Image (cartoon, rainbow, N blue to C red; front, top):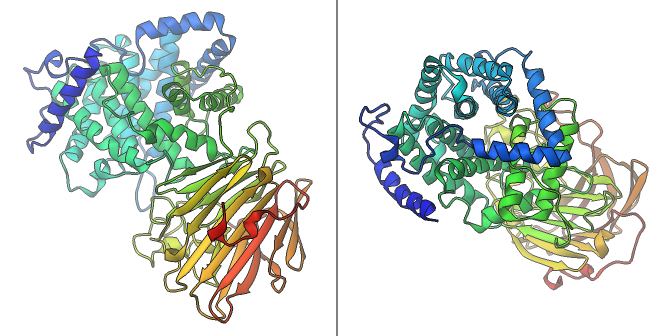
Length: 640
């Protein structure tokens, strides 16, 4: 406890010092790390693991068969890396050249081989890690104009430097240390001192760049801290002052406004940051004390449906990659369900022929944050949950033990959040082991204008997968949502076998109605899902389009439709007999965009009455059959 209090006091001094406009002083001859960073572990390794912890891990491998298999899998992957060439310096073509793929490959090569050397003592592994780090150290630069490249390169090189430190000669250490300082830390120091360089704005960001850039710089600072204590002190102060901005974006309940993929990327580096600080300095610097952080692992549980597919709103794919950060979160937050998922993802990686998933470069960290098998993993989970904030989503699930369970994900939130789409009020739906209502997710980032979204006329909003027309949403005919609109879930309720959520979409379609409300109701364990839309104060006779995106084959029977997919079927029934469903292709207007093969939109075209009002209710039966309507046939104001 005394150690943590000392660090907390020191941090206040760090922050004051970073306010100085003076240049950083790397290598100051009188600097002594014991004076500047008194809590720093003096020996290597100190990033994420120590020699004592490695000894305990070897003891665990002797009596835990799964852990022994995990170590064997890591060593086997390290063996395969021995024959792979080192990464060469190369920037991609395009508007914003990047070396991010190479930066991530450096992490993969170094972490596996450096860990394998610490475990086995086989010098082949240390030689391979050294070769990778020396090559990266000789790059002309690490591309600070796309700072993710700097951060990930620095992370891999720093951890390798720390883990194989005894194997490196004095000259090799000097070369690698100089690269970490000149190609990463001095750029970071400029950023933390308020540089106006447009490429160094990450300390002020709240999205994934914040934890990734801060985390890579923290790794570099902690690796070289005994030789560069003044610079390391300032980097630690800058990073720990900046990281709460990223955590605030998960607030107040731990949700991910950027969507599940970028939540995964951000939380991975946030966890790395606090784990590195805790191991090397004995404190997490208060970075784990908020409700948002303590609950954020629950977000990851809920944005994956029973089929294993993600609630993939925004720039996200349906398949979420395994993420070792869940193993750390399970321990820190004492969540059995998170531990169960982390262990499931770990075992899947162990059984994979190649560990080349999106976050598998960090797979060796499972040996450090090993997720134990929990008892009664999902016993306490409710039937529904609401994550507020930029995400503002509600999720409903009938069961946690069966892939055939019903699942509903409902999206509100902030259209202007990073990596979001114009998808307020949209939903995904599962049942019988089938994804009935889908989200197309991301398109290619190489499309012209994909990130041109600073104004409502930006090219981003003409991309089909991003605009409202491709989503399971309600919209005025031909009118996409305001790309800067917010829509909160205004009412949410949980029942023993379901619940409901209502969002206000009025701001999404400015000038089209005085009030636009959408509610979803999950009844009888998902046997009946109701989507209800209410428009008030609209134009008389104004036309509206209801849509549901699906891969199912559709047979229309007037105001009802039967969806068939993977040998299962589901009925959809509209309450307006004068309206007819229609099927339209989900093909985009441009051949440059993803053709969305196999997807179609079940649509219903209707119109407001003479007073400009519209009530539309659609019932869906994702578990098959057709049961009696629920009390949700009442107006949204009466839903409970």
